[in-house]
Image: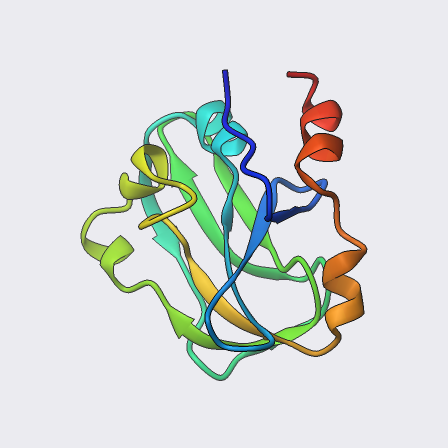
Length: 129
């Protein structure tokens, strides 16, 4: 059974946003459900700091034993940090998707867009668990 932490915002593409200590900046990663569906993650391609993306634009790729998938930006924003630890150990996404397995930190362009994303209950209903 997948984990669906409260306090995060979720997308239909299985990314999440988690607030950081800095106002307007959120960690982005894939959900526990998504990593479970992908299987063992072996490679992640992430953007450079300073890159900007619109909602649902591809910001990178994730490669697992089963498949290669695009990563989609949950909301408009600018990348302010990249989790470089994933270069050496991408499997952290499998073991700790909501913690050490985050992928980028995004300074969002519009806080209202964050609130429009699904909460944990709605996301859990979407994936049927």
